[in-house]
Image 1 (cartoon, helix red, strand yellow):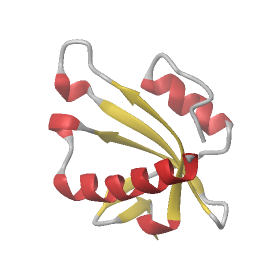
Image 2 (image 1 turned 180 degrees about the vertical axis):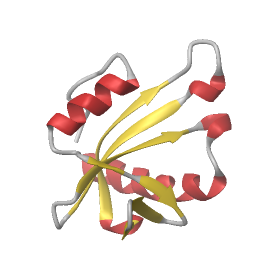
Image 3 (image 1 turned 120 degrees about the vertical axis):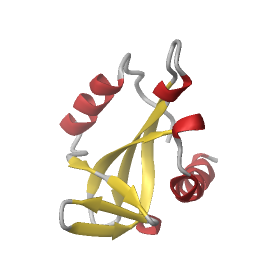
Amino acid sequence: MKQKFHYATISEAIEQLKIQGFTLDFNLHKNRFKVGEHEYTADEFEIVDLYRYEGASDPADEATVYALANKSGVKGILVAGYGASADEESTETLKHLHYKYHQGQQ
């Protein structure tokens, strides 16, 4: 699925995605998405859409907003740094999700 919208800021993207039903706020830890006490295996999710933001003056401000969903209808948002602010473990999990996302666009 190609990006349908471009949002000027991360907060605007999050606000609009929540309106679209992406209400959970995911944290990524060891190939698992965590929301409060609940954990989900990252492999069961697909990227529905993503928005990348680059800091104007600081590479540490680079981030990607992911709209994620699984087949059970669980939908949420993950905001992850990339570049200098990304951690190696998260990067590998997200690479796998990006691969699936790009395969689905073909």
